[in-house]
Length: 167
Length: 146
Image 1 (tube, helix red, strand yellow):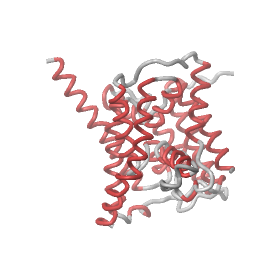
Image 2: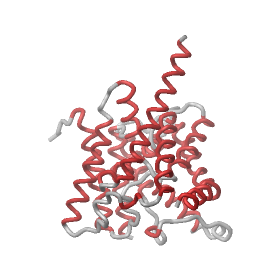
Image 3: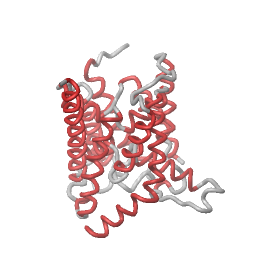
């Protein structure tokens, strides 16, 4: 049986993500503090990367990166899971192949990744922000408004550049 | 150990769904603002509602959901508020230029999109820079503002 969700497909995916994030926070018992940390695509990659760095014998002699208390013994494997899941989905839909984009210039892409994580680590990602709004956090609402303001500012900038280019 | 397996399984599931639906909250806000298309924005509302329902149910069912609802509890530090505003704005701004949020970039990199792979190189190099440099500025900000 195939359920047709139409334009609400993404809403359902978001709903499932929210429920899963709440579930792993509530019942794995060691993914917090902080609250609402079941899914995070800035915080989890940061802890995953730092855990690896801290556990490489010849590296951890001279460097040690901070970890959340919850991830001192085991790292979060969310990112690894996303890679596996996306690769399976890509292979099934025949989209798994090396191709250019979305950002064509490789140095711009590297710079954007660098900037996003450095701003992102001041707070966290959009998905965790949405989770915190669901958690009833006022700071989460403020952060979500800030993310929206950043998106709108970038869109306005891109529009004005496109207009100048058209003239 | 349970946490590690749980995050891996949840990651596989959301990675699969994210690839099939092109899920990205940042693109949702951008599409709505640019072309009044609310399709992708529904994903953002889905997480908020799904999270709220999940936290409420699991809280009543005896799950570990401390300080729920958070309300004003995390607003006691001015530095944290400034950090959230600055961090949120920067993340949103540069994610539009990158054409997707960090989650979407991980999904695209797994599909073989070269731009996303280079983005992730910068992303993980950025973590090293953050841990050496930006974190000191953040400490200074929190020290000054409290």
